[in-house]
Length: 275
Ligand code: IPD
Ligand code: CA
Image: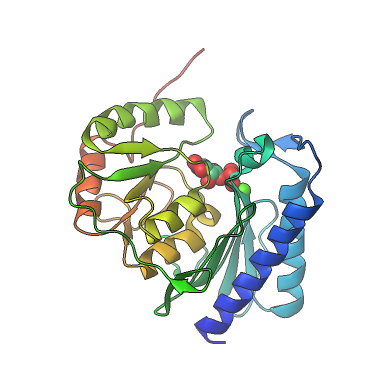
């Protein structure tokens, strides 16, 4: 199957799950359970959206593997893995903040962002319908039109997105890194959905984005959109983007942010935190 066909399938799946989230959500969304910490929620709709995606993939691509945020890994035989975030930005969804997305990507190789090759992906912003897609070597689009990353003049004049993890110790470390970054950039945005942040880099609505602690499903589709839009997406100290660190943006300013984060120890910093 060629990457454009996979792109179209990713788009169709993300749109269908997005319609479910939009149309079937209760008036007041409630927490169904918590995951890594008491501030890391899962809702009934996170589960329903992922079940829908899994059912469609099982029917249409039965030989592919599945890696999804809310369920067990499904092994496959084709060498392709679907990487699913049924709602990226669950806290926004819970509070009715209109920035959350369904993220669907398909990758070749091991289900690890440091080693996989992303083939195609789609990030569908559920409330306003913005839909970014990308195919490896085939460019990135929003709503069918090509997008390009921006060309910020300097790090000092760059608008930088970031996000925070769910554990107090991780957050204390991220707050310390932020004290090094904030004085050196135009401003910071914490919009609450990593997949959308990466797509915004891909269309120049954010100049740069960085975050420590992303899961594979947070970044799989969005990183491909950013890359195909001309941005560079890496980790620190020559490492690929992944859980330790993801930094996205156009060169050479992306490199300037990488160096600033390296100097701040942003890929290792962890605080002990006690109330
Ligand atoms: C989270 C969002 C958030 C980011 C967190 C992610 P979730 O994903 O992308 O912006 O800062 O690191 O875990 O939990 O809403 O799927
Ligand atoms: Ca999620």
